[in-house]
Length: 304
Image (cartoon, rainbow, N blue to C red; front, side, top):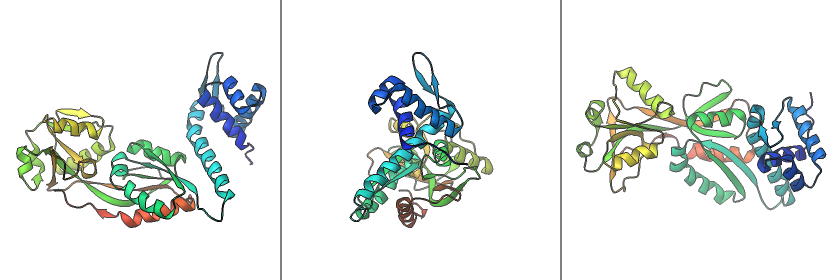
């Protein structure tokens, strides 16, 4: 079964979505509205479903259209990049690497690897989607990105997970807090202090809760937040302590917040590379992934 559509059909779809209607999109593409409608119809026929809902006043994406939009953008980006690269194939290596990454990992180690990679391949562009664990897995599964850097725990049989780094949960508190005077802690040491935690929708919270249930420990929280950065703000203000992945905590030079390891047992999350099973990466993405895996593997340095 062949799929019959052209690059201009994809551009027509993107234009209608971004410009909010057929009239403005037709003007931007320098074609008539009937011609634009035929482009959209041909794409919808190839997909086998409606992509746009048309009313007298506006155009909206259908559910299939929302799923298609990031894929179409990526296809056009890769097509345009390939065309530009072919203009001067002998003197440059160009391309686009699209990846999804949990925010803490994106901040901690991704920039250093990108800097090394771009020193060798300066014409490679990056699209980095800093997403939650669940959203990142979905972006990989949909093919919106080539691979993801994520937390272990994806249940999709179509995805593979390759461990990259172990990230222990540590205590974050003010430097003048009593617990800051200890070099390491047990979970029982946290009892009695107001605790800041992230919501149950967070992948980090799920990993921590599951590990603590196994050892019979329950942490009673006083503050529940959505983002790890918010919990650090509350800690800095002296409102409580927090248990966070080490990657999410400030460095040793922070003037107010310090971190301490929590033992007996140590609880860690595993960050790794998520890929679609059986799908070959583009050469640039494969080279970058090899550099990433060769740079970051194993445990993080001990908390200080």
